[in-house]
Amino acid sequence: MNTFKNALLVIFCLMVLVACGSKDSSPNNSNLGEVVGSENQEDAKSLDVKFYSSAPQIHTWKESYTSIILETLDRPELRTLLDLPLNTNDLSMLKCTGYQNASVQERKKFFVLYLASIAYAESRLNPRSTYLETDGSLSSGLLQIDKNSANRHAGPYIDYRYSQNDVLDPHLNLIAGLYVLKHQLEGGMNDDRPDIKNRLFTNKSYYWSVITLKQEHIIKTFVANSQRNLDFCFR
Image 1 (tube, rainbow, N blue to C red):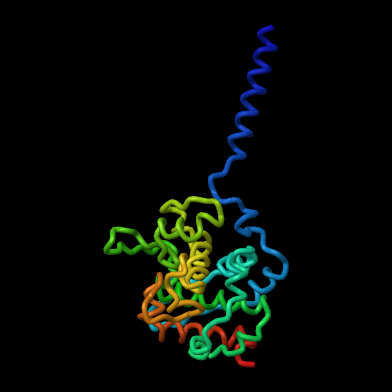
Image 2 (image 1 turned 90 degrees about the vertical axis):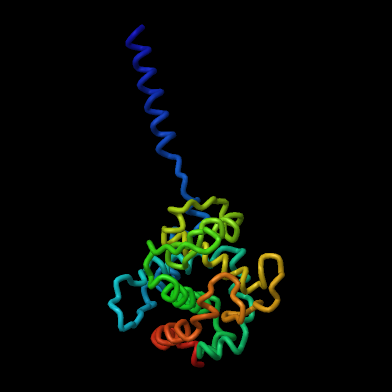
């Protein structure tokens, strides 16, 4: 009888271990596009994103960053980001007037380079970079996003609550950034910023101050990369 009880106890313990091991506090991979489709995979490999500076380049743009942006842009609620018309003056500044006639896949590549250019201006591509804002929030990671903003902009869509460590994860940081950009192009989360609707560059910043204060840096970075990667910009 004792042997039988011991056997049951062992089985129960194994079941508990398996159940615990199956739990994951991270966002659902199927929700966040961790599995990259073949078309996105090829595009991620083909995009050659580089940055030039007189200062030593310590951090680089990784292929996995490109992959997560391309795949996350397949989410239905972000399709509006790809369908929205962009301000023609902003596109002219980026020397990408061909965007208006670009395919969905080409537009996705455009936003890879646009976000990469913002990330370079914000953090020099350092995923561990942090900055203490005057309101006490801690802007962090590639796109300098604080956890409260990540939860406000992205949390409801991906059903996940960001921690401080999460915004330091480059992939989760970029996902949050896509939702910030979505709301910027839509004119604010509550349609309260008509002045920024469809705008890549703004006179008064919505979230990223570099879009207003470092436009020239972003434009220079974007154009240098688009000349190598986005033929459709120059059609």
